[in-house]
Length: 209
Ligand code: ADP
Image (cartoon, rainbow, N blue to C red):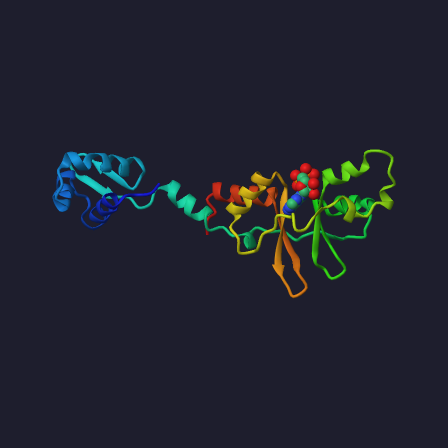
């Protein structure tokens, strides 16, 4: 919620002089009580102000919803990312399936011999490759993966909320966390729907340090 200039002035006055009556706030602003009434109602309903009968308005601090939003908008990927599971491009689809089971992940990131990120491989990519009687040992992951430059990636300093929006928008389960090196882009982590869900639970439990 964006406050207008008059609402901000009202908050300053109540912070400094509260508890203060509506009339007195109006006097400070050279306005009538009636002109001010809608602003006082908005500020009270949003939780910035509280009103006590016969005492007046006083400042309560930021409303809880604003504190939560502020906290969420500061959460960065580095505090929630997990270790990435990577596989070489020339590995087979069969190897990729084994890696997914062994490492218990739903997405593998594919790298070349220099360790540069070249692709992402999801469960559905492997299911698609398994339709028909193809030899999964003979299919390299490079043939069935989604590849750069079409991958959606993020950096450690990015905001979790922006990653969450990308996961929804692009309909994918996770993003590689990358860094630029002289060779190209390297994978240093992964952030998935599970990580974002954990962040969400943490906020709900009030663990906002
Ligand atoms: P699932 O296999 O469960 O549907 P996803 O929804 O993550 O898993 O994957 C859907 C498609 O998006 C797959 O073809 C996969 O290769 C691709 N994909 C997965 N992660 C990314 C990413 N970070 N950027 C671009 N494409 C991706």
